[in-house]
Image (cartoon, rainbow, N blue to C red):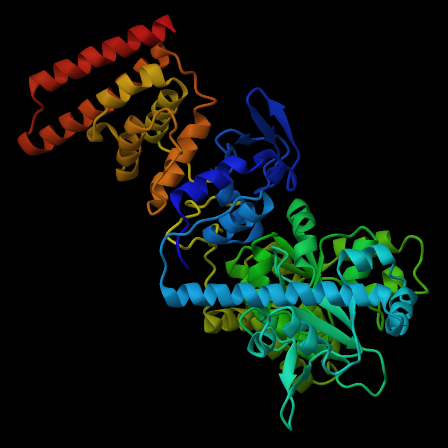
Length: 604
């Protein structure tokens, strides 16, 4: 993918209302020239999240999540940097310009844009047919009969594909789309005897969109009993990948991010019924078991995923595969046990749905079991526990599941539960679980989440991480505080930046930050080189901390002297190792600096 021009990135940044963006994920209030609120990247009770609406920067003084508007959107919406720029440009009406790109890459991008345009036109046509066509009467009756109202059906763009064989073939070509483009979009297909005909006919259509709301394809439900298959999806294509797709993610994204939780169901109407009932964090896997790719997509938006899916053996095995992916993504998977024979749509919008159905459904979600707990209990329920051989087989099945869990009270209690169910010695269960754990070799290391980055543009070193940041050393705190004060008070700051040397600073990135700030003190975040991830991260933190640092000349001088004292102490230590004693001049300088520090601290 080609790079956006620097001017494009800055125009998009200037156009964005950052407070509006952040407010979709957490409530913020104005405090002087900035806004504060609860951090959307980690759980907290006291607000420590701060955003600067002018520079379009954010920083959490609790978990140290930080970055600019592109980092924020990338982290919360699971977008790489180019996609974040493009999404914001579309939202705020900014025309984007790209640097010169490879002709083949440009052609591929233009082709994908054409396919997307064909899908969007078709989605609008199908939606209009559902409400305006007399042929769609049966489709309307079916949907309304399931308890789905017109408002939610229109909101999600539910439509109807006419029964004629060549409606889209004809309309598409009239609109300027060639048959190869209609084929590429999955809207038409080639007949056995030649010619082309519409893929979807006499079906209710559900437009499948990506997280940014762009049409990717369709799912379509048959209306006649003799129609096969009952559900027909778009074919795999450049835009549509079923295993990477979640129906309703575009509508659910904000609610998922705000609640920190996604609820996954199986069908289109389950999603519609949930959203109609005010449960906005629901998405669907469209009738299949959840895939690792879908877990990855949800991990960009939520810390917890509740599965309200078919819990047969195939489904449970798919859930276990998803659990392995979830562990690496810091996502907690839970399972909500649905009443037997009933799906969410029937619970929430069916004829037998009670007035308190939304509250009861939420209660099912809130009481969901952790996936390993659910899986172990289902395995025990399916097992033959009447014979020693059957109990052995059950232990063989549950041991790997227990071994995949982190050491915890939940695991310990579950092991006791298994021992009781199998009428076995707890030590035997523990040994078998330990053997399965060692055999599986699954790493227990927890990786920090970071915003995706590409196009040479980093998302920051752990921006948005939900765990607590590494504590800074005293030296690191002093140097960062001084740089922050230099940003807060540029007039005096330039002098101190010039007095600082690389020897004063503890890391290469701090040295590069000092050099950058010395030349860009008035607008330190403008034009940051995005191929230097560490520098972008460091400068962003320093700029946000500048709002909280006392930027008086006295405070800046004291911090500088403390860094100078540490530098002299390192020189003295090095000289002592090499020569056996430190030069008198260094000792004199250290004593002088120590006296100046003492006087300033006494005066302060």
